[in-house]
Length: 336
Image (cartoon, rainbow, N blue to C red; front, side, top):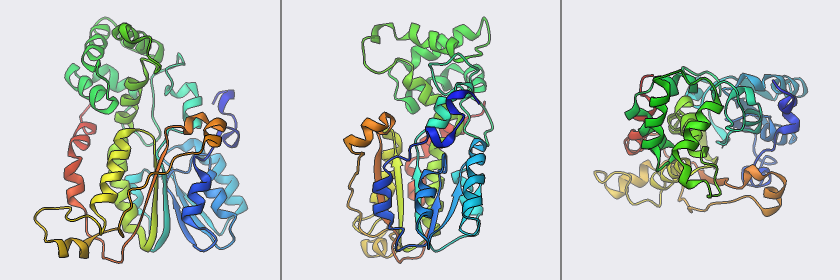
């Protein structure tokens, strides 16, 4: 790891920590799951309350040094598993008070140029968060032009997706794309007309590739279903998202499977829907970071926090949720 990320603790800022602590009430609750351990910011803050127990997961092996420090300090109250969101169901834990997801790319990952997340580096294309089947290098050199176009357009919301995909294929017909700098040049050449815009021309394509390589939307969908199943009645599911697709998924899940939604399925009578609602009435309220936090940590500026409270109803698998976002699940399942 390079010098920029030699210390997890130095580079890690848990986003909206004060808001998370206020909602989760660790002074009155005991059992927590931190689904995005990262630098351990949420876990450490929660463990300061003497009655709390935290089970943390993260797919990234680079967090293990920080895990050891916390485990040493709280040997009886802290557990860690290197897992993806979709694997949460494999852990034997239930009746959980609070589950927390921070979906953003951590500073630990972004600042380590060797991992190829940043378009500011000239390193090997990688973008893997851990426990991956493919890398960005595999995707960019092996996806068909049609599939590349879909990935860039849909997952990156990139209007120039067709042109970028075509130019990527043209380039790799002469030589393999190996590093971030080569990809940056292809994207910049494809978007010459848009240089005056505030957003870097590479941002959306890099986002799309990262999401695809890590199957981030599939993991989110499966993860929040698994988390809901782990919650006890009255337990809270707290999710911090950073881009519009993530927030759309979270909003739909909370809104359509709560008691104040008329019907998640048109085939169910309203009384049946309320009986099966996974959450108490959802207020559809978004919390955002304070100006003070944004000034201290500029990467928090796009964060949106939503939370919902688990109902007393038995858990019933939300098949309508899967159907609603099947296009993302199918897209991330394309073979490379």
